[in-house]
Each structure stands twice: as structure tokens, then as C-alpha cells.
Length: 106
Image 1 (spheres, rainbow, N blue to C red):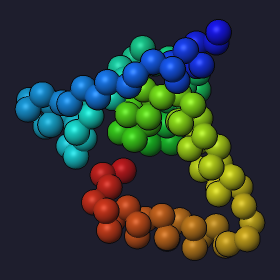
Image 2 (image 1 turned 180 degrees about the vertical axis):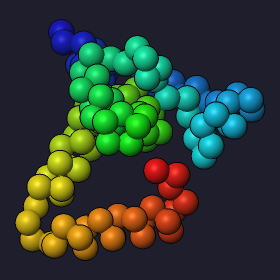
Image 3 (image 1 turned 90 degrees about the vertical axis):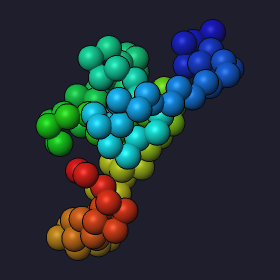
Image 4 (image 1 turned 60 degrees about the vertical axis):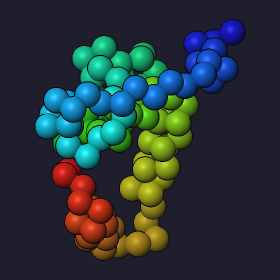
């Protein structure tokens, strides 16, 4: 059985952050995977995150617990970025405004 299928069948245990970790990961309530030792399936996504944002962003760290979800979300993001239906400048403006509304730090 592949590692991904095995992980799907395993129960997912949420490990909340310790109070001292909130300063390091503001807004996060679930401990993400170690960005220096990610599952092999998500390493390319973590590398792209570092290239684009200068670090692995918090949502990717958390979704790294479930590589199949991170891979699907990444595919959706690439499809949206690659779409030519909306002017690229409008996509950037909408993305920035959405980030402002939710208080996104990146």
C-alpha cells in the first residue's frame, strides 16, 4: 500500500500549538509539519512556497499533514494562476484584497 493511502487510513490527530508557539506562528492553532523535514510528496510545494514567499506559508505547513489535500489545493492554485479568463492584474488585486480582509500575513 502506498504511503499516501496508508496515511489516509490512519486517524489524523491534531496537535494544538503550545502557548509559546503562538508568537512564532501567529494565527495558527494546529502545529504544521516541520518545514525542514517535510514528507517527500510535498517537498516540491514547500520549495515553490519558499521561492514565492521566502518561507513555507502556514497553510502549506498545516496541509502538509495530509499531502493529498495539499497536492489538490496546489493544483487548484496552479489552475487559477494559469487561467486567462480574468486579467492577471485583477487576479493580483483580488488576491491582495482577500488577504487583507482575512488578516493574512503573506
